[in-house]
Length: 172
Length: 223
Image (cartoon, rainbow over all chains, first blue to last red; front, side, top):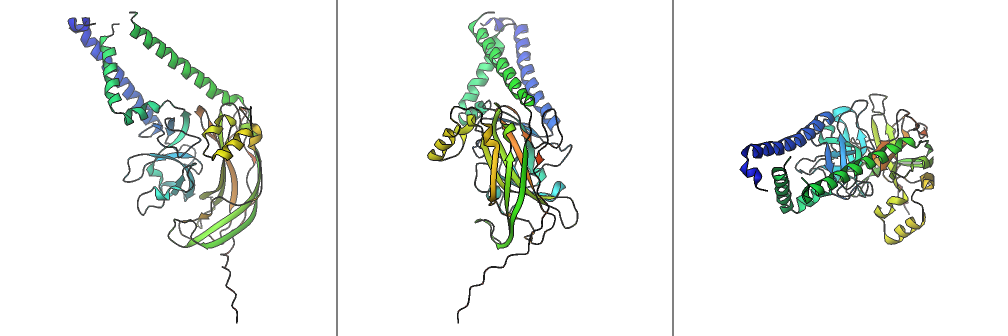
C-alpha cells in the first residue's frame, strides 16, 4: 500500500493522473458551457415548484442559443434574479414584445401565482439576458448527490479524500 | 490488481454504463411512437374589465378574460416514457406598430399525468385517490389525452405592460403541449414534421378582437 511512497517516479505519475482526471472533467463542463452558450449547462432541481414534472435532485440540460426562433411562451427556463444567487427553474407564461427588450413573466407549474413576487423589488418582468438557458433534456434523480453534498458539507471532504486516496494508491 | 476496491470500482462502473445505455434506449424509443395530436379551439365570450387583475397587483389596469371551448385528442402523446403532458392555451396579439404576433400570454393550462406519475401530483388525499382509481392497473392511459371543454373559464386573465388592452385587434388563441418524459428530451408542439411526429391538426382559433372596457354596473338610484 505504501509502495507508492517508496517509488517517487510512480507517485508523481499517479498524482499527474489525478490531475488529468480533474482537468478532463473541468474541460468537459466548460466545453458544454461553450456549446450551449450557458454559464451553467447542467443544473440540479432544488425545489418542488415544477412538480410533477421535476422533483428535487433531477438533472436538467440547458440550451441558451436562439438559432431558429426566440425563446417563447411555454418553454421552461432557468433564470437569475438580481440580488439572489440561486437560479430558478420555471415556465415562461407571458411574453410582451420581441428581441432583447421583450418583457417575460414566469410561473412554476406547481405554484398558484406567477413569479412577480419572486423578482427583485419593483421588477415586474424579467428579460432575455436574465435567462441562463431553456430546459431541453432531463435525467431523473442523478443530481441528488449534489443536494446531499450541499446539505451535509462534511461529505464533500470525505468524498474528496476517498477519491484522492484511491487514485494515488491504486497501481496501474 | 484484484483487490476488493478495484472490484467495487468495476461493479460501479459497469452499473453506471448499463444504466446510461438503458436510459438512452428508453429516451430514443420516443421517436418510434408516432404523434398525431389534433385539437379544435373556439373563442366563446370575451370581456375586458378595468381593475386589479390579481390580488397582489397594486395598480388598476385593463385585463381581458377569454372563455373558450376546446376539444382535443392528445392520446398519441402518452407512451411508456411519458411522465406528464402539459397542455396550455395562449392568446397572441400584435403590437400597434407591426402585424407580427409579438405578444403572447397563457390563459389556461393543465397538467395531465400518465398513471405512472400520478403519485407525484400535488393533490389532496381524496382527489389523489380518485385520480389513481381512474386508471387502476394501467401504467399508460391514452384516454386522459382526450379533452372536451365547453365554454371554459380561463385560469389566468391577461393584462399588458402598458395597462391598455381594450379594442385590440387580430387576437388569436393557440393550443400547445409540452411532453415531459421520464428520461430524455422534452418536446413541444413541433413546428416541422419529423419522422412519425406530425404537426398539431387544428389548434388555432379564428382571429377575434377584444371589446371595449365593460362598464361597471351602476348602482340603481332609488328616488
